[in-house]
Length: 204
Ligand SMILES: [Zn+2]
Image (cartoon, rainbow, N blue to C red; front, side, top):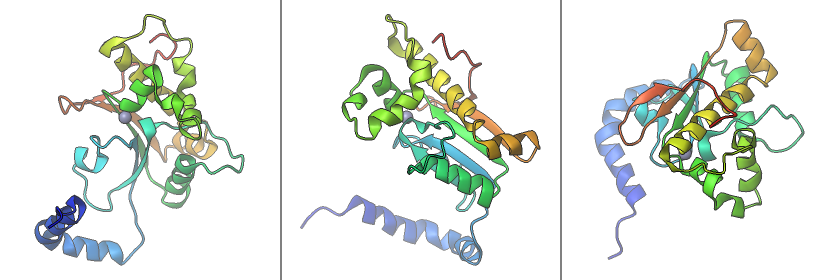
């Protein structure tokens, strides 16, 4: 007998343990379009789930995840920009009141930006991690170790915050007081959430 599919096993636990207590909430959510007030941009890292970290209910968070949780600059050039499209949907259609950047310590994506091998996957991943080039260059030749990587992680978070403000409808909504932007770092090892360290993007 083949081993049970872990996803289906999880679904069965969800249906028997979680669904009964949430069925009414899901029924309410199904009667209208989603109305989250917060968008979270996070890394796709399997260990850093915003829904879990913020103990959020279904329907509460509009979550955008990608490799390293990066935000590109505003570039309406006709290309397929998944993160930018999700941001446009969150701000213009859902009219979220806050955007939270959720970085995390020990990010494999950022580790790979520094040490490889992500740059060996050039079709999409190479150009994507190049978003972080402004903080990766010039990079100290002696850069290595956890402290260095943590500094890079902070710098990348600040870069994403800066890039968020290159989107005119985000910048305008923030200036009008309709939208707040914040950046936090989550440490997988300790479970602690901290505001992003002060910006110092050129000197990691
Ligand atoms: Zn990551």
